[in-house]
Length: 111
Image (cartoon, rainbow, N blue to C red):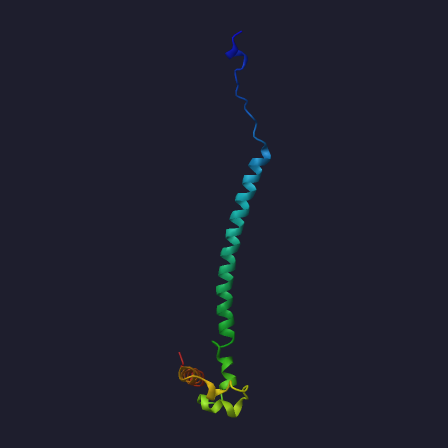
């Protein structure tokens, strides 16, 4: 016998366990199930936001705190503010933004 024949390697075919195939199938089904859930949650989120928005009247319930004022200057008569945090301590752009917001809230556009 030659030295080469003594150490000849043979290929051993291993049988793939069936649980490995099952593992792949379970992972694929789980992934597809996850995708379906994400799609359903997305649809539900959009549908519920429309329903909630319709229920609260497009946010018109938030008008109540400023319903009786026309400008930012009218707010101190209705509300109390912390020291150095009142309307007089706001910047010009802050006053402009507040006046704009109050104006839009007190005169909602009808669509």
